[in-house]
Amino acid sequence: MRRREFRSDTMTAPTATMRRAMAEAEVGDDVCGEDPSANRLEKLAAETVGTEAALFVPSGTFGNQCAIAVHTRPGDEVIVAESGHVIEHEAGASAALAGVQTRTVVPAETPWLTAADIAPRLRTVPDVHHPDTGLIVLENALADGTVMPLHAMAEVADLARAHAVPVHLDGARLFNAAVALDVPASDIVAHCDSVSFCLSKGLGAPVGSMLCGSTDFISRARSRRKIMGGGMRQVGVLCAPGIVALEEGPSQLARDHANARLLAELLVAIPGIKVDLENVQINMVYCRVSCEGHTEDGLVDHLDRLGFDVYPPTAIGIRFVTSREVDHDDVRNLAEAVVQYMSARV
Image 1 (cartoon, rainbow, N blue to C red):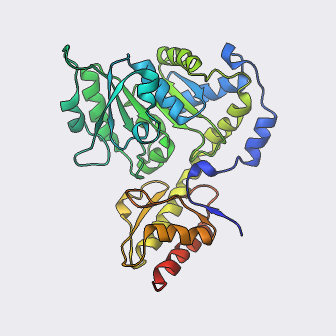
Image 2: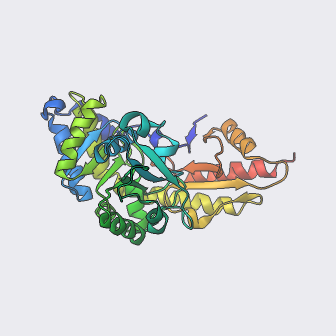
Image 3: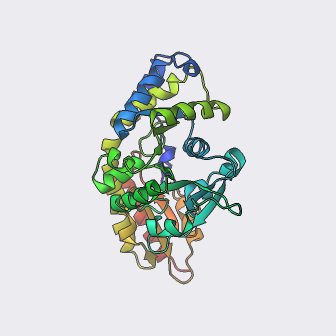
């Protein structure tokens, strides 16, 4: 039985083109700045998102934590959404690696942090009793599958610049956000001082992320990468599929979004299944089970028996993620499997 993958877009295998690029990659010692493939990828990434420079890093967590360490000093405070990836999925690395404390904020009216959420929490007037605000971390797209609008990012950027506080964007699915907003990725990045984005999520590379910013920022980030153990040698074999991903991946994301929308519309029509269609903005669908005798854990177990890989339920429901390895038939078959479970007598 063929397993169908709906856990995450990180699960995709490298394409034949990527494997060929890996086998044929020009390589050198990247620690010495001599890997041609790494240099080409970094140049391409910077040009694509509109920054002066870029740096290849092993993972999105690595990129975010490297950025936090470069922007701040030990003892600083970092403002971030309570549900942000750096809080929920990065193992307390900000405290362990950068020596900063995080000030987590539950957004008042939107899924994303707004300038109104941030303003009363800025600490930029010297006071012996509290830490200085060293950084604001935003996320786009968000973990719930929604996308922060450009006007909201612009308002945060204006506030941050007025107080001389840098803004880092966790843009793991930056290009999904760009497709959803129908703008170039550079329009999103323009509101931030640095950005990290994953090559290994929707873009489909087997490994790696990019950290982008000013020439000075990337110079300091390169040193920090070395401190963190990310100074690799003939890294071109990893950068080569990243080049393919960055050149070919963004154009395929609209298909993933369309499949997610199709799945959401099929699910919302099933009695006992709830989906907030307004929040289906990228390649993610969250659903809740609201039928007596049926549970979200039970649905996940049922899907597993039928060959659908889905993560266990979270606080906001069951997450389904579409990717280039998911087609229309997979989506329809998944919806039919959900109908089967919800129709079963308990």
